[in-house]
Image (cartoon, rainbow, N blue to C red; front, side, top):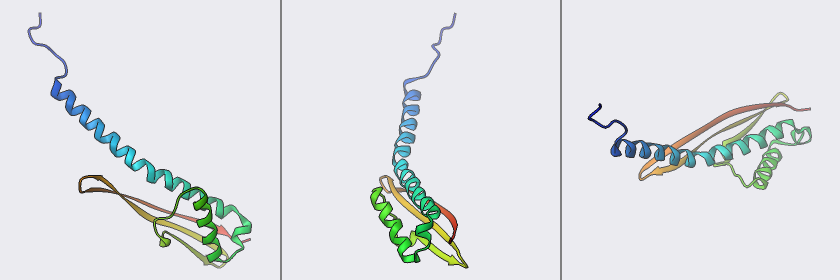
Length: 122
């Protein structure tokens, strides 16, 4: 016969629940920037495959990107987040930015995104 009870104590379970709650709160806060980035990524990928848009000047291409982002209710954090470079008929789209999120009190999370796409001008 066992004289001592076995199992999780109240404080042990409380610590586990607090850790799980913190992880869930962090996941919910970080979810939105990743969802926005997936939309931005999709718009840039679609632009690189649209030959009618690729024939336009770079300023017009940026304007088209911003219009498509506006339709999807997403915006780039800064104008410098997307750079387009024309190198001998090859357009390079560099998407590089970071998003800062307030987490708890004075603790922030920084999420960085950096991707590059290439498209040949038809």
